[in-house]
Amino acid sequence: MSYVDEVIERIVKENPNEPEFHQAVKEVLNSLRPVVDANEEKFRKDALLERLTNPERQLKFRVPWVDDKGQVQVNTGYRVQYSSAIGPYKGGIRLHPSVNLGIIKFLGFEQIFKNSLTGLPIGGGKGGSDFDPKGKSDREVMAFCQSFMTELCKYIGADTDVPAGDIGTGAREIGYMFGQYKRIRGVYEGVLTGKGLSYGGSLARKEATGYGLLYIVQEMLKSKGDSLQGKTVIVSGAGNVATYAIEKAYQLGGKPVTCSDSTGWVYDPDGIDLDALKEIKEVKRARLTEYRNYRPNAEYHEGRGVWTVKADIALPCATQNELNLEDAKTLVANGTKVVAEGANMPTTQEATDYLQENGIIFLPGKAANAGGVATSALEMSQNSERLSWSFEEVDAKLQGIMANIFHNIDNAAKKYGFEGNYVVGANIAGFEKVVDAMNAQGIV
Ligand code: NDP
Image (tube, rainbow, N blue to C red; front, side):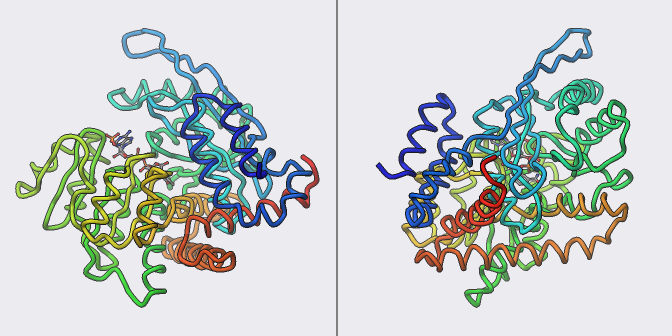
């Protein structure tokens, strides 16, 4: 049995009931076969893949807090410190009822390669809790965040592990967590990114993931003599990534016509009204059902269905496994040319295979949504310097980083004979740097 197959088999056996984690490991290891096969003896002797796929440390802890009725609630908190080969652990905190250890491990594992691709010195990690901020008062969210940080603060720090936002963790939650960290540890340091501008946040961090997604699509199209001008774009999600992907799609000449949340989706043939979307989601924290109050001509549908709308470019920006094989078939039948992942692993493995087999250009999340973590790393740099850069400065760096990522994954794919396969390109390019650092640091 090949070394890759052996490790996959072991991961599945040793980590039961963690399908998303298995999926992420299989996707990465399968696409690393050309590199691993060429170095099989050495990698096996060094147990390189076992060390890569086993987190350096995983924390699971109790998070008790008191709700507005005086009832004590108990959630579970997680932090998986996956790999510090190229820098301090870095990755977001997800607050969503679906969170479990397997989901955090899948996200943390992906994060290693994504962070490596940015070219910046950041290792991989991820955290979260099954707490649901939806429908909670600000006081309840604060109570949860303070309790979560009371435990987590023992294990993180500006030079060890720097968490950030993710699903359910926005500026409000980061603020409460930062306040509690400072209060307990007594240090004012860049321990979290995605902070507010008044206390060490970076301009353009909020926009970075969505903007970065469009920058890499633009760079890819440019390499083929094309552009976003006049392209119809379908987007899923209505959160941080989706909103700023829609904003940048407009700025680059595209026309985004859909968005969605966990209850339904909107099709606006005139193009999504960005101001309305921001007001509904960022100010009112309401459902997309409200969208038609702003745009009576738009359609609102319950359930899922964004991928049925005919478009040139599809940008899944909500959550994992939200684009399945049926959706992929619809996209191909509708003549979609590009799928770029704003979310983490939003496309199932079968869907990815189908899209690639049918000539759709597919940009995987670990490359396409790396703009968020890259700008988080820029926030860390500004915190270390105790300086703030202008929006234009950060945005220009982000554009450069996304263009570099595209060329790196493109070149890695070509080097190993997989031209145009950006999944293989992204995994190999991310892996090479991490392995180099691991080898240099000995068996740790
Ligand atoms: P938000 O919480 O801001 O938004 C998430 C959006 O997706 C919401 O519209 C939400 O709907 C929808 N959604 C979440 N879960 C589900 C579900 N199970 N089914 C259907 N819809 C769902 O998160 P972000 O925009 O920050 O993150 C979106 C994705 O991008 C995630 O995969 C995240 O890991 C990834 N990502 C985020 C980065 C960042 O900088 N924020 C960086 C890189 C990747 P509702 O409002 O109804 O819950």
